[in-house]
Image (cartoon, rainbow, N blue to C red; front, side, top):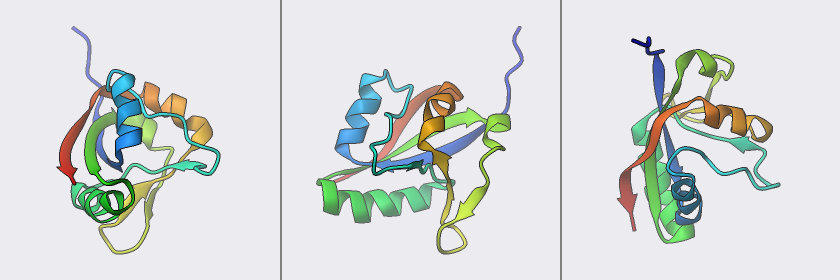
Length: 117
């Protein structure tokens, strides 16, 4: 029997283009960042992800989605939690060049938990 390592739940608000790339990965990985995207920002709570997907992604992309996924908790310790505004606006800042390694630490599938249009 294999021991399960602890995981941390993260959320990611996303638009339809990025979500299609996640689907193409088999719901296992986030796509590489574009040159103007040096940081990958998963967020630490669902409410913040909902706000971004509903209020920003819908306005800019016509649709917004909230995804939820699990990442190896020990691995995540390398990324300090950043407060990007109010007390509950918490993000991880993953440098684009580390995204492939980050993706390898995702446990299970990336799941869509909310959709806004």
